[in-house]
Image (cartoon, rainbow over all chains, first blue to last red; front, side, top):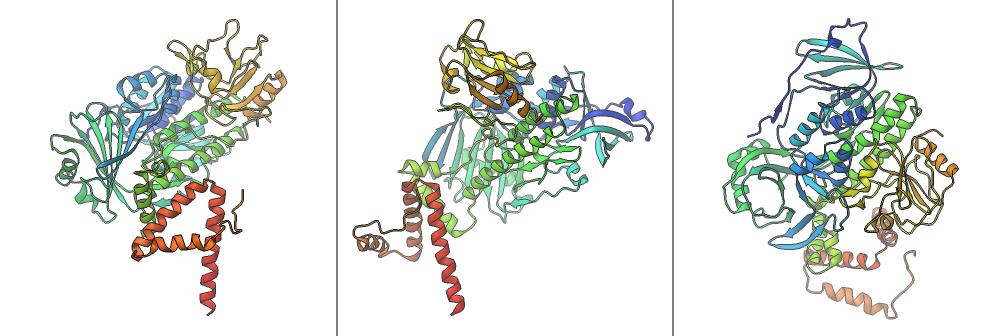
Length: 533
Length: 73
């Protein structure tokens, strides 16, 4: 069963030889080499920051864990130089089906339109994602990745954080201007800053089994309410690479985890579902979940990202994906603050935007969980009504909640400049940029990524050139030397006319948009988005 | 558009009667199932979350008033 897929060695670092009263000083220490910490470290290094990345283990890959990575995450990983490998290995999907009993209630397509570089989702075991990110770190000498380095104490000082780190060769100390805690749901750094992590605990238990088999099921997400093989409860089937299938079965709240986890007890359940027992177990896990978040994502100079800051139920693929959105939101801001280009108060917008996203993710995943595991007779009755109405009405189908899958949050943000012009469509300030083709096999997200990700001005030519302010990348559609819009989708998705312009943040969010802007209007929106006024 | 609480049926008795008759012959359990479906169908027809919330508020307020009256008796 579960084996480590990659093993890394502990190596002594010269920082460990420094006397305790004169520890090494670093700009950024990231704690936790999971998908979030690894991505954040790569992003910061690509922006020219030196990063120390600590992890208390020396291996990755015990269990598949997160498996669904969203389009948004893949676009981020494109900027980090790892998406091609993820997509090549991953299983691409966009269709889900919902069944009730033996019959299909409906199917949905998460990306029904063409003209996007990346698919709605890929399924990829978390250990592959982590291994590819670790490989990428090998290309970046500015990241100092230290395995078996466990933070055991933390002291906030005026201008830095003092960390005590335990290693196989004893403890040492470090000072960091900022510490980013990406150390997961059971974050020890969260305890060290004394933060609460309260929320809702769901009593129902779920059994995850990843099984290896060759099967003819299509590459789709299948979700059942009350299936014939698992009466009265829900089930999920989802494909991963290497002929591995994720199976998720709802158990009752009184099930004994030790008994239920035994392979000899799991096997008959799965065999009933598949109609055969020609499979091997890769991983079995039994869990209850919680939906909760920290009150404040920033504690002095310690900043929390990913599961350490917020936790959701797994239905909706909102865990790892929201953690990656945290990383992309934080890294450009932290980089600007460390370079002295923006005041430290810019970091406050990380808390504002990402705690709002966490609330949305918690709300969505709580609703899905409540629908799957009703809390009262009346809730069960309402669910029954929805499921029966879904057979013959469209509105009933849309009310069936078998997990609402992760899409980027829209921020109500102090960094956004409100619209001053009239718009009939397109992403409004605080929304994520939309992809579209700019040539055969080339996309707007590629143009955005090229030349490093700083702010960019996406403009639609009207003959006159809109010069972006200093340091802002110029992405021009049409006109002399501009990019093409072969399918017309760029203009359509951005509700663009000649003279339209969008100011894009380094994380690909819209800061402001204009019809025929003046230089002053663009400069003012840029200052605001950089936290300068 | 706010929740309408003026009388909208030309023949209100017919409307009340239609709902009453739909419950005839049902057990309490079946009636509750029926009501759940009816509420969702009507809510979707209204299709306005503010009106729905107002309607829920009105129905809830009635229940709280009812409880207080019971406690006073």
